[in-house]
Amino acid sequence: MSIKMITTLAGLALGVAGCTAVDTSTRNAPIAPVLVAPDQAPIERSYQLSDAVVQVSRELSVSEGAGFFPLADIVWRGDAIGDRHAQLETLFGEASARVATQLEGDVPVVAVITLHRFHGVTERTRYTTGGVYNMEFQLTLQHAQTGEVLETSRFIEANLPAPGGQAAVRLEQIGQTERVRVLDYLTFVLHRELTGGVAPGAPEPVESFL
Image 1 (cartoon, one colour):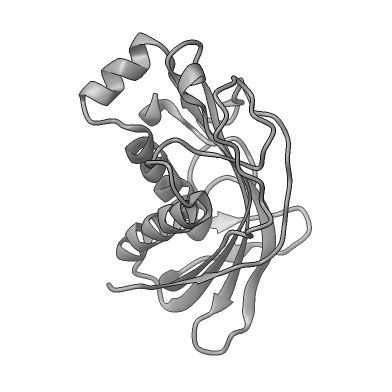
Image 2 (cartoon, rainbow, N blue to C red):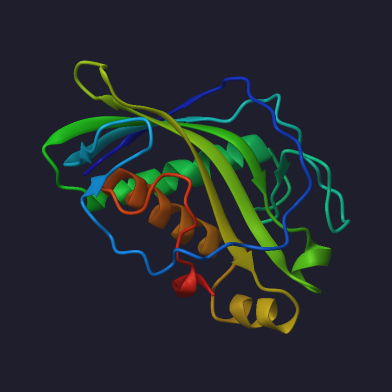
């Protein structure tokens, strides 16, 4: 399935320091086709992903600092130094394109993804203590043909452990670069959010990514 990625810019900024822990208390929760959020009726999902709109506001601050916890909305070292906003648009776009090939439902949808925060780890953190990739975004689902909002915007926080020191070096040696790991994980998170599973924003299993 082909997917056309549209990149729009919208303003949302949220700057806080990096995280050093991840909650995996619901990692064994069963996957189900019906999702029940506190403020809405059960959602029966049978989607095919026709398009993805990735919004990374230029107002989100970026840090290229070498400290452990740069104060910025975006901290990303998985690509070469460059336009971090554009790099993250591409990263979410690639994850969405992967998900599009995995869904064979009846309803064509457009996923609107609005990034709030993307806090990876600096080189100093990655090669010493390690940390957490903290990714926060809004997800809205619209009918691809009518534009009707099928699922109103919900906040998603995705946290992926970032091994440090020799563990990070070993991952690099087997091809598990930062970009590879984060792309795989974002694909997992988006697939989960489009098919059901645990409630939006709940901690997700991370064993496969350790």
